Structures are given as C-alpha cells and as structure tokens.
Image (cartoon, rainbow, N blue to C red; front, side, top):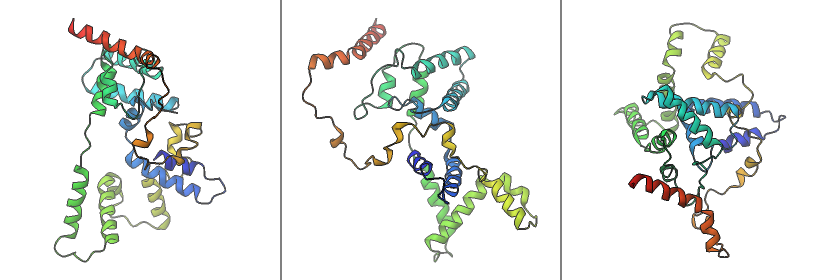
Length: 266
C-alpha cells in the first residue's frame, strides 16, 4: 500500500488523473485502516516506524496506551509503558539490539528483551502473536453461496461481484444509509450523499502523508525492489571477515542474554 501511495504521490500535478487516484486511494485506505497496524509498524524491530512523523508517533503511542489500559493495567503502568516506548524509539538500552532481517523474527527479538518491567515487550509479543486466519475468506464464500442459491446459477462473475460489493457496503454503512431511506432525492442531493458517504472526496492529498513522510530518500527506489527474489540470493556470501570482530559486534547482545539468564536462574 505504501508503494502504491508513493507511485500516486510522484505523479505530476498536471496529470488530470492524480486527484481521482488520490481520492480512490484514500477511500480504500480508510476501509483497511486500523490503529494497531500503525503500532505494529512502529514496534517491528526492523522498521521501527521508519519515516513516521510526529503525528504518526503520537498516534502509535496513544494506541499502545489505550490497548494497555484495556488489558487492565493502571495509570502508573501505562506511564512506564510510555517511557519504554520512548527508549525504544531512541534505540536506548535494552532496545539497541541488532535485527537481522533474514534470520530474526519480531517475536524472537522481543522475547530477548528481559529488562523489567515487561510492559512494551509483552504488548509487542501480544500483537505479533496474533495468528492470521481464513475466517474472513470463508465468510465471503458463504455469502456468495447464499447469493447464488439454487435459482441464480447463471450469474456471471462480474454481476456476482457487484451484488456482493453492494451487500457489503450497505452492511458497513447501514447507520448512514438508513437516514435516507424512503426519501426522494434529486441529482444534486444524490451527489452530496455520495460525497458524504465517501468521506474523503474533497481531499486532494494522500492520507498517509499525515503520518509518514513520503519524501524521505528511503522511498526513492522502493519501486525497484524485486519481490520475487529468492531468499537464497539475499544471503550475504562475504567470506572475508574476522571471527573475533564478529563476536565483538554481538558481544553486547550475548552479554545481555547472559545477564538475563543469570537473573532468572539465580
């Protein structure tokens, strides 16, 4: 989604389709937007909220505090969580450990943080421990089967898709749509209703710009990244290294693990 946002962002202002593309992107983005996604982007040890601006950082902190409060933690414990949140953002101890993209996993990295209290660590492990399910897909298949039934076996794919989209729209927007039920609206009023339902039609900038700085150099060659590269080609084959220097690089991490184990078993 960030790649698509950057591609639209780079379109010249003279392009007549840029405003329409921005509006469509914003509408679809709002359908999938969830505060926990931004928080996970920030808590991922590899990205650490890369290019997040002040507003994005603030939103992630609010989401973390709200989740921690909903889990039954007190105000003092939420303050401790925010302190750890800031230390993690500045890469201060114990959140200064390295992260190898092709070897580590977010759960393993956070599990190695054993400095009490465990507020931020436990929150991250809860978020990254959420399993991906196929319930939503199975529910969609059940809906399509219900639409087709025994008498609509000749529906083509496009028409079936359109019916499903209309049903999904009315279910998600039922509170707004019921206020117009039974009313006879002219064309101008219908256009106004459509703009209100879309919610972002009048906006000419990408919503992601509010939380992510899309002008950062890190995004310049994002479209050149080959997603089909095999994992083997990404492995560093450098053989010219000193084992002692390598051990020194990981010395801080090994020392921290050793200290944590001694505290646990002492």
